[in-house]
Length: 340
Image: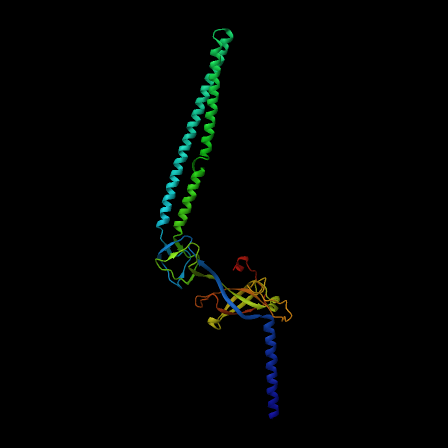
């Protein structure tokens, strides 16, 4: 009897081992998984586009903000004065254009006057020439009339040159004039800088590392804190290179985050890195040595989380486990979904 019991126990253990081994083989073959995975999201390093002293802070660290919500305000006094200065420069430019336009008009009138004087001088010269040929006047009078015609012609040339110079100085008229355009551009830049005195959130998300207080000085382009956007979450899972032949973009996945234990998020593979994790590291491994040992490489696979929930808020950099279902046909993946 004892022998039968012993054999039954051994048989049961053998069955459990066979079934367990078969299940492990099946699961590892069709459901590759890894615990070397970390949660990611779009992060924005908030930096002011102008320099200045902070005069108002509207949020606090770890606060959830909406896109376009005011974060803090920089003292606008200097930038408001620059706008006033640019407006004055624009008015001055328009006045200068009006003066140049008046100069062109005056130069045109001088050209017309010179043309009339030339026509009159030419008529007198012809009349004197006819009188000389008939003997009614002397040759000197005719020569004086010809000289007057030549002087009138030269005066016309000078007037036309002055008109060309006035037109060149004016350039385009109205708002198309280059001086007006430069003044408008300067005003636009001043307006833009004034608008940048208010720093707003660029996406819905949560603040991290926010320490600004009224009176702090911020420098243009220098990040002050981070905004973690919460509209798109993913996991960067580092799979063994031997698993990649079965993993394709569009396949479904199950994601569990260590923070919430057994709660599973639905996921989908959106991209596979074209290089291993060590390929572009600062100090890549040197394998051209005599004591080389083959090591299975890890390749990052990005898995989009399809059902993030406010009940289970995700956090960038936390650990996760990913299992991919390679039995189902992969779905189409839009190009923008793979954007990091």
